[in-house]
Length: 145
View (cartoon, one colour):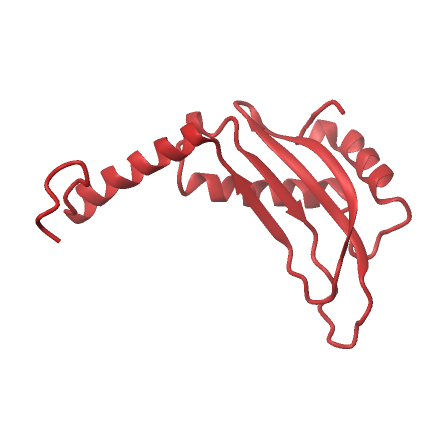
């Protein structure tokens, strides 16, 4: 499947893809462009905490819609699972599929980063610890704790 950039001008194509993936499911499924945009923003927010903008390309996100919240709801429902990939220009919708979730299942936005991004994030975190909090670098002497 060709990846679709998540932007307003591609909203019709994104909604068509969601419609194909969800079939007749609408109650708990992700069916509108605006929902996809909000979920991509959540994934971006997770990346903002650990990486600067230029280092975010290459990350991916797996998103699963929520289940019903009512205690009286007993049956599994269909929702949408989205796979997003982060490129230099923003988030792209790579795949959409219908999945089953159970009542009280929360919405999940899981971000995965590459090994290189993990190294960059680790170095950035260590620098902040040293500069902002006076914690000695782990590369140096470990006598002080």
